[in-house]
Length: 315
Image (tube, rainbow, N blue to C red; front, top):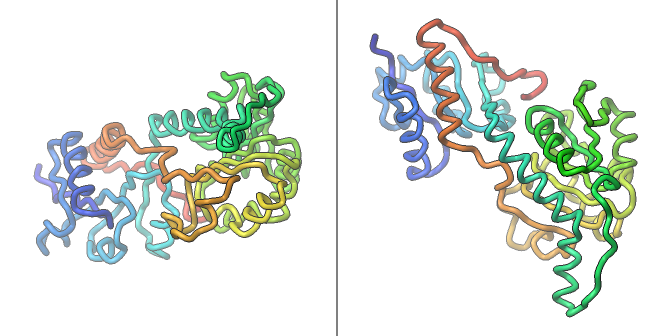
């Protein structure tokens, strides 16, 4: 049976799109994966599925027979917002390899803070030779915001490194070796005992600026922060103030409300900030393409749609 082509919709440059199209084509050689510009008008009218990476909403709306879209990214808040009230079925990427990549980054940068790497770097600049007091990992509490696939895998990796781990989510979770918290009261209780806070939450209307001045103040003085989720979850002005006041010792920031941050932005030169270029959880094109291929095959053969995004929850 001959099926309509599958467009890859993205606002990235032609070179990036070509790499994705090649990977997707290798994973499903029976399908024709093309850029939006390569579609004829007849093909645009016939397409029922599209693969997307932060697409131009106008291109999505230009496909009148489209039934569903499969994102190759785990974060879909921008896609959901751009499509508004469209009934289109949206599928986000759930990839064990992505969770493993993120968990590796969480462990690496937790150790960076745990073993005082920023402090030693500053001492080197000042030519200070001084050993800082060692804290055993079992005496360091790591709090994780967001206990979905990414948070759960990160918690397991941290537990294997002997850290004490707590996790907060919208609903109570039961994960071996992890103390779980939920709801507003649970958030305050967890933050109050957290030495290093790791943010892995999706960005939704409920989580936007969740970490405002008040909640950052619930952290113990001297706490450290890692944000690998979305910049909008933290009130940037409140974060700046908490760092300047010494309430927070250091923040590792991989995500920002504006990316990249403006060249004159405060983050770049602040001694209490490590800036990363949105690299903590890289998507593997190989594994992502294989997952998309399986879902497309099930749709072609049996009409099955993969689990979609909960529009109310935002993910």
